[in-house]
Image 1 (cartoon, rainbow, N blue to C red):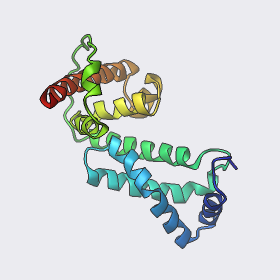
Image 2: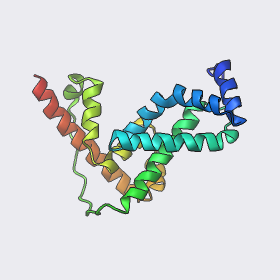
Image 3: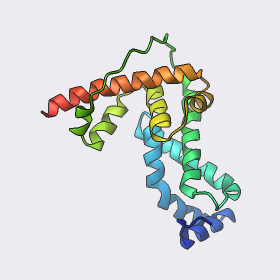
Image 4: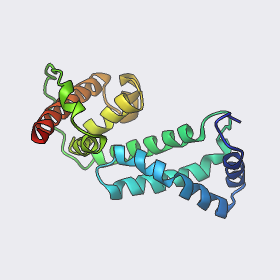
Length: 184
């Protein structure tokens, strides 16, 4: 068991492994907020995030017997949520039109805009990114995946991952600059 895992959390997980429904409900309630936070970063709407979270919890409860207490439970569950969101994104891609990729342009540096905004403003601006750019930005910048891993998860070339990340950063910088100027 990890040092940062409490005995109560460990026991709760053990009860969930035996299929205890009331324990699963407690685990769901305990981690719902965290799971929604992760889901919202990858989904276009709150409803989509809720579906991803609920699907993820089903996967968690179906595979919790394979969970190894030597790993962080939150990290194990976050991986399931991210993969569920990406699987949903992949499924939804069938219904979207594909556009030709443009060349990524050079991106400037506007650190002053970021300093004038709070986290809520930045998250709101991220919501305005196209879904694929937002997903790649989250995977790379927040969750620490490399472009090869992202490419494999999303079934795209790693060069496309780099281009989409550049576009996302460029759009965020422009939006941040505009938002910062409006706060002046």
